[in-house]
Image (tube, rainbow, N blue to C red; front, side, top):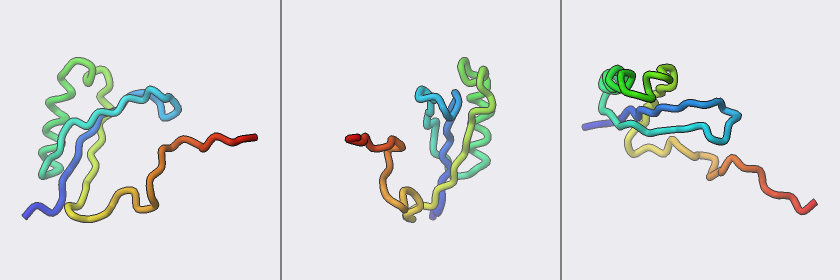
Length: 81
């Protein structure tokens, strides 16, 4: 039975830029399959211009590992001052 998955993302732009582009590219049953997907994506237009933008995250199935402290938009609330 599958206990974990590996999610492949690609991003480019700086952390300070609001238009930092994130793409979820796939969900894989092994890290090796995710790495093989990176090899394929690196040859495609757009991705080959940003070869360092790939990220693989491991997630455990049926386990609350995200947003443990609650939801956040990353935007500070507007003050009435």
